[in-house]
Length: 198
Figure 1 (cartoon, one colour):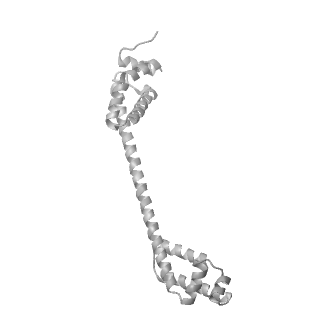
Figure 2 (cartoon, helix red, strand yellow):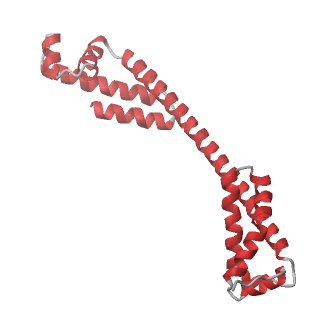
Figure 3 (spheres, one colour):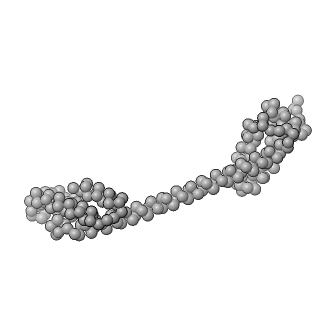
């Protein structure tokens, strides 16, 4: 035979005695009102259902802390309000974190674009400062990917002269970079590029 409790005091006492039926009665009695209150705050059905379920899980977990002489309805609505507010805060925090991440990514993209443009501008200026012979050797070997032998044949000079011009060109470009103060990160990046060219 199904036991029916007629008031909340009896339900809470039974609940504290681990009576699942008492829990079911409280759930059936208050779920609709709790859900409506939560939905008013969250405005999202699925979220409201999740919070409502969390409220009743808390009711079972904290049943021993309840005072049977006090209305359990007050406890339920108070907990549902607090959980709803916490959910709103969490959603807002996640939204702000996502916005911050987007801003950081945008900033990083802008920084990368700036560094790329500045790097190309600086290297172009350094390249233009070379003598015609060094400029031609650097262009053939480093910009067009020719070997020293191929550059020597095209320029009608010895392979050793090509190597000498190339080493001098890299040295001159490094010195040009050092003479022109730029962003520290950009300086390291350009210097590394020149090192790989040597």
